[in-house]
Amino acid sequence: MAFDDRARRRLADILDEHLGNEGCELLMAQLPPQGWDELATKTDLALLKTDIALVRADLEQVETRLQSRITAEIAGLRTDLTTDIADLRTDLTTDIAGLRTDLTTDIAGLRTDLTTGIAGLSREVSALRAEMHRSQRQLTITLVGVMTVLIGVLGVLDQITG
Image 1 (cartoon, rainbow, N blue to C red):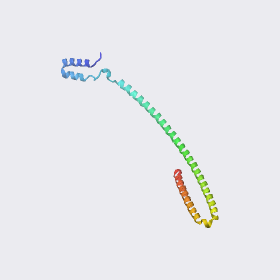
Image 2: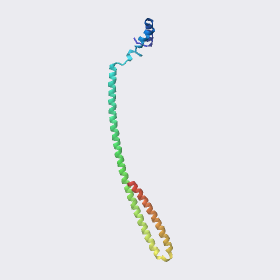
Image 3: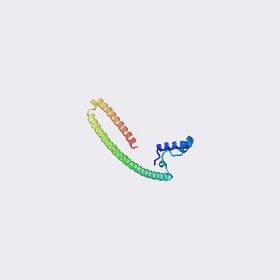
Image 4: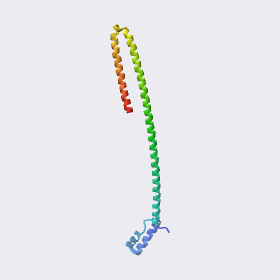
């Protein structure tokens, strides 16, 4: 027979009738709040402890596997990053070498142009002396500008490679 709330009230009424209110309350307080089948036994607790230990062991294995995976993933990312940085360094070195070649060619072209201009000006020295002075000043300013740009580019390149 199940010991539900109705049965509990009936037992309380019988105990109250035979033992009085105080005796009834004393005995009813000794009954479990739910049915006896709801109480955990030492065997139940031992099984629960075993289950918890198994779950803990499983969690430790999962944690170990996750740590291994994360460590491997980080190592892979580190390798990828190192490779990417090396590739970038190579690309920058190549680009810088190309810029140096282009600048050397441009400067050589400017020198050629300047030499040609001076040769043409030497034929008209007396008539074009003022024009030559202005051209030299303009070329000097251009060269200073180019050198300033070169110094800036070399400074940036030094910062990038440094």
